[in-house]
Length: 384
Image (cartoon, rainbow, N blue to C red; front, side):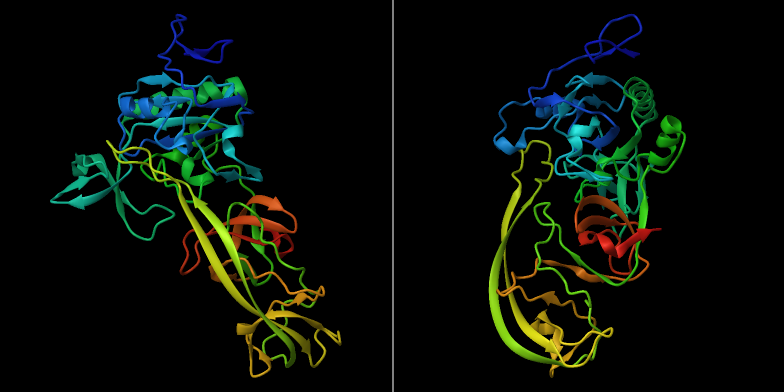
């Protein structure tokens, strides 16, 4: 197996591997990573047809990948390795956004997660599998067990041979799962031996990923449209302690809308490509302009905006974030993640930085949240 000047895959005797050109690609890729996917119900033939469709029912459904590998190890190339394939979607990794521009994608024929039914295991597409074909375990993003269709040895070994060649040819630095770079994805799933695979290709089981720790309780905001939260600047004394007496000077109520587009879910076999979910979230916030009635951290005459829910009986309740009074009503606060605050010492991984904000994923589970993505202040992180 080798790669020639046209950035396509060939056998040692110079015969090319099957090439079914996809029209869905962009200009030059800067390959640093290999990203592994599964087809989630599509056969290799069905996946190739879908990934090479120039005019799906949904214009946003045009997708592609560099290689498709069947369960028996047959390899089909759809996009040359020097072009951007559309496989990773709205994705992040270690400060890079849109991983299509930095990766080579491989799609593996695999039904993914399965449910137990009538003594067997059934996929979303309706295929039924025996117990010996299934790994029963919990994905690192889930809280309960599913069945996961195993990857045959022939498929794993074909993928490994390609990965080793791609690493050598393009100086790739890591291999990742689609699950690592996109929030709502779980492929290739726990049945794919990623730690072993990475060890064979890169000599280490863990990804190249720097970990950080929160240095205080830090509020975490939802990731809406990939944009950092827009907030008035915090006062230096923020957060002010619980039990701090305040005087309310003014109260305002404001409504703000947030447009959220969630990537489309993979269609079941026989279905057309599903459209992304588009939602408009309306948020109503009540703010109070307050004056703090005794010194905080040695500072007097502090005045700023706080959320009304943070004040009861003219006293702060819990740690309260206070924002500067810039002479105008503050914008409503962006959606806050259900976890609200990350405790001090929480281990996280940076995804993207938009100073003064950083988008993070949990590096280890919290009691109610095994997986979390959100924006926090960059100053709230230190190297773990």
